[in-house]
Length: 580
Image (cartoon, rainbow, N blue to C red):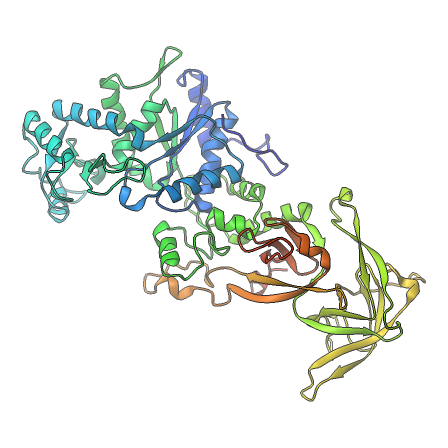
């Protein structure tokens, strides 16, 4: 059974049904499912899952959950040259992290290779498949163009007996890679190029990560996929729009399996898998191609598949994206057949909304300048209460201390402030959050005019940050106590690319648009309680953004913090898009 943890961000029951829900609902009501809706998520273990796969996962598992059915996890491992157990295991980990579970319904295409081979043999015996010796370049000429019929392969009418012998020789390793292939014998005049005698088996002298050297011929995805659906009893096969032109071949294979008596019968109903397509997820400021993501990894332009700048699910997990935020984003994007691009800021806002409710608050300073309270005695220590999460009353408070010297953000002081600047400047009063009110009296500068120290006075009666006479204080800034502050490494992550569509320009390589400031490494001065944060634990550095203790590089008592997100869409503001 497909399951996901529930939250207020999950699918609302009042949402109008999209076309896939309507399709499944009609089939289920008409009795075509044999009483159980069965879907599947069929990734190829040739890379790491990314945010685009998250949408497909939520659709496939979500539909099964909605209709009380089951969703199979199936690895379509038909291309051993690009597949590995590393990719296979990470796929499972990512799906579980996202909140879904396949239960006992795990399948692998490789486990069906024996039956697929027998099905191919049956096609050959019926004159519906043949061995072709044309090269790929030669086949392009024979295949022709959609508006004109193609030319039959010279071996198209070879006898079934001869084709069966040749196919067995292919299996036995007699031929080299590319020397020949097995084609389905369908329609060389079809306007759909994919229907013109497509390859269904090719030679590949590469060990399979799961089966070793058992096979040197492997089924093509378009042939294997419908067979897998049929043998598993899948009722509804959902995929992205690029597979729409492949649907006639999918149906052709299902028809042949029906003739062979290979379809599952459930509660007296013959289960005929059906395919429908929806638009894939495209997001600004990133690339979604596995090939391009692999290039970034192999050329060491990022620090692996789980680099927090990558759109991979493991990268997002390491960056601190909550799984419920990813699910909420996929739900919000919706399911349609319209090709569109979603602004990544919508995903980032989903992340903020979840972390605002769940992340603890702590104080840290990234660009420090010293603040000195002149009317406080040396060695004096004052304790105050700080709220752990204002959105969660049950989170309670913690004690923080301060003394005569503090660290504050350099950007919180200006010598000549504009009219609407409400933070520190000479003669101004601000609230040191949770601590007290502070009035700046003067500053100490170096010979270049750089501010070295901010001096002023505090009102002991304002402990906690409230004015004793009730007057209004417009500015509030955060701080850390200089005597007890700890230094912790911080990585300020930003978007990996600096243009909205890095792969949308045919005249430039997408790598030319890599953002040179997508990662900035620095050290933060932090309140001591941040030292005990565990790998994967989120936190809001007050007034700075959301961070997470890195799951790979953090150690006990020595976390490394990755920035998950700023508090607002600061990128849009930088780019002149009106972000707050």
